[in-house]
Length: 309
Image (cartoon, rainbow, N blue to C red; front, side, top):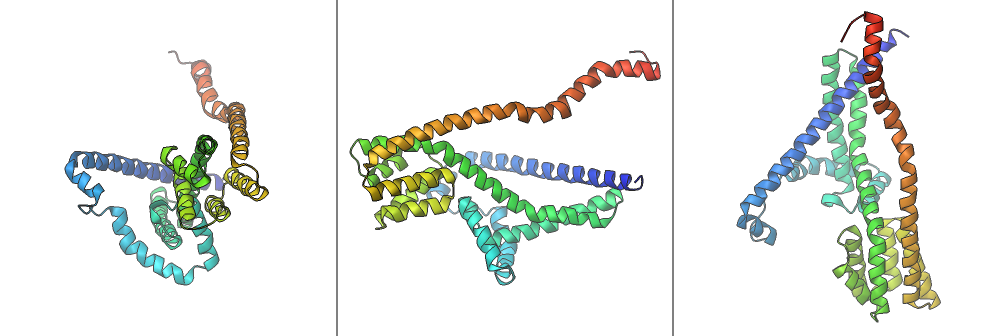
């Protein structure tokens, strides 16, 4: 048991070193983004030409990486990665709003590159802290899963933004329908005047589908399938059911709008009630020990070492 303790401490130290390295890399990347945005702001007219499409933007490091190594690995991944796994990742990318127009094969390529990068960090930490190189595989496993964790966080952030914007946009849709507009015109008014964000983009896509000739039921079902959010799915099913039963649209929208506001209030109360429980672990693990050290540290020093402050 005593022999396993030094190795456990070495593994813990390696994990802290890797976390510090990742945090330092992320901080450096954020600092680079700030400098790059400041540089674009100083360009003035040239930046406006780039946005207007009159001048080509400069190649970014991510674009160069995607155009070379990632593209090569993506073509290879289409051959050896199973179709089922690619479909699962593609569904996640779709629910995340297709950030940077990434494909499932490119996500797998980033998983491979991240695994190699973290494996190198693990090997360096192994030689630095003098423990078995076998533990570097733990770093590689974390690197392979990091793009999936990033994608999952993107999905959660997008669902949270849609949940926040849905009650407001639903109120606007209800007012537009009650003012005499049909569903397509009211949806266009929501897209034009509503809060900008993922929900506005999805509603704009639904409006395009309606203008292309799809029925209201098909467009709404496609909306629910793209987002895969329970709140939005319930809203879509209620609209489809009201359309089939011949219920006035304004009436059902008013009921749904009231229900959304009640659910938002209940969700806020739930989060407020969970706050004390979530604060318990930081209090016990970080704040209370610090207070105890400040209060009883001098007393313990005097008792055990006979020192004076």
